Length: 287
Ligand code: PAF
Image 1 (tube, protein in one colour):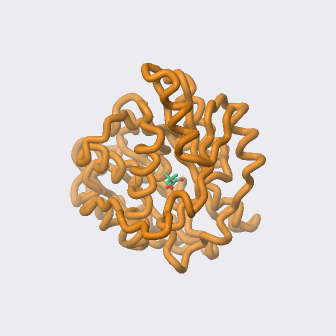
Image 2: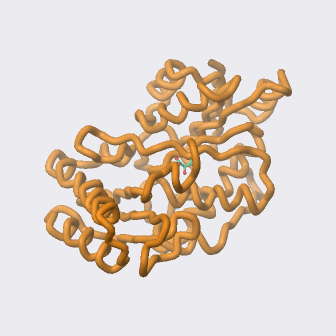
Image 3: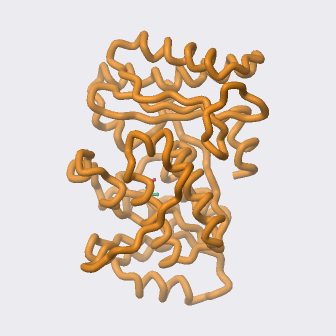
């Protein structure tokens, strides 16, 4: 596995064999099984796998946890090597945002809601860095986790709108045995908060159960899931949504598909989770 810090080094390796297929797994490091599942899938579907580790400052608001974002490069590299990555790109801020930088990629409607409503500058940072990484690596396929569902919707829109020549693959959320979605932010939780954090997946599963039983009212789904969050004293609901998984528009009435999603504060830690209905495959096709 080659670990490189320059764009030239990435491009040299990428174009050694122009007909080879490359899978890209962009990350902010502090890897967990969710990230590694993306690397494994990329490994299975491509000749070569590139991962990137970069904590992208433009997707954090000044009030957010950029400086305290967890980092462990040595461990990350060991995990990537074990999972079969061929190339790891670990740029720094001066390389990604050099003096004079002033070009950003913005996606309009699907960034205005859900995470975008609470974090207005977040997706501009994500789309800008992801577009840069796409241009640097020029992968055949790029892998993203379902856990950040809105991010996948936004990136999919950017790929279509800007005619970016790659296939985006969305891989299912990896969960702990008790249902908690894996996230680097879970490390911030105290033991009682960790227990309370299962409330997100419990509420979402309840929503799926109602949908499977024939419930179609957005209001009823909202009320039922909200009641589960409210009953957990350590949890504070930020938002809860029953939306169309492609447009992210809120649904008064569910028809063929829906995305149940939420953000919940457990203590000071803001956790997000989602469950698509009837399934991720129905919404996105085969991963
Ligand atoms: O999902 C993430 O970890 C980040 O948003 C990404 C896609 C690596 C861009 O910084």
